[in-house]
Image (cartoon, rainbow, N blue to C red; front, side, top):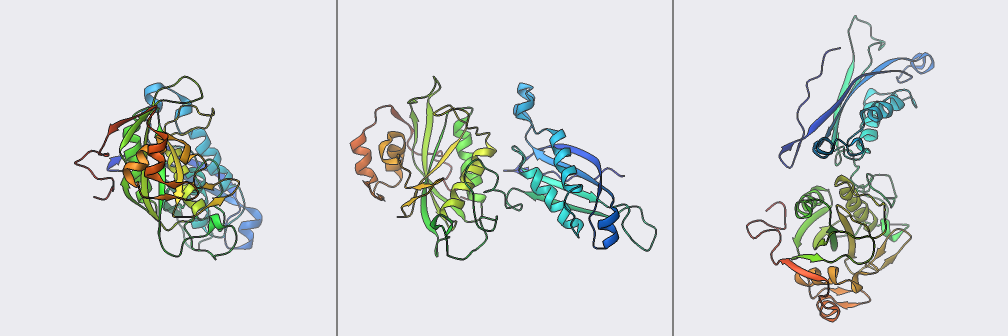
Length: 344
């Protein structure tokens, strides 16, 4: 088997690292013909996971890397699992299984079928694909928490019936997201998150609030938080928007290990147009938005006249709650020479 040529994968113009597992060999039962599904044959796969290894390398920490043993196990499970007619389908299932692994931004999958029933002498039959979090429709699936519901693809149009949290708006609406974090370079994480949100089909980042520093309340002793509020225009259903936000959190290593504990990135859906919604996994507006200075103060710099359903005007709520524990860091954020809209 020849070593495949791997085209670099770029994220925000930066070439990602690669974790490569080649020659995964499993007997599978994939194929169009009945004998292939009955007797089985050899299948092989090469998998290239595009990741950032910086944190794992700096800390020499297995828990912060993508485990190549798990890559092999997930791939073998698909190769030896439920039969598919097409190699293309097998490759797609492998790609989705690898993209579900935290830290994987994109994946190249090559599936080999060297015993394919051809009528001429040949060395190999291969299907090679590349998928990333968007093309793999996993921005919303790759998350902690809620279900995107529906077809499994949160961005696919669906019938306007059922749970209101899963209904797409007839026209794009404005939603507000609250970003917070206190681990690592939070300012940089916020900027990356804006760009990552903006790249998701159905989300357009419009503008961001001023940047604030917040003294932590409750939980363990920890560093101060940074907080911003972001306005987006979205054609996603509320639950799909939440799921997309949680997918971006996962990309930044968000772990829910302790209530009110430190975090790399937290993205809350604060409001979705004028909708009020109360489900097991999503409440809109955010149930504590009107009680938090670290939400109201930045929000007031962004949309003071927005009428928060059931609570009132954001500017009035911010004035009433005050600035105790909240400090302005940057009135114009991102920096003046940049734009809150990542495309600008």
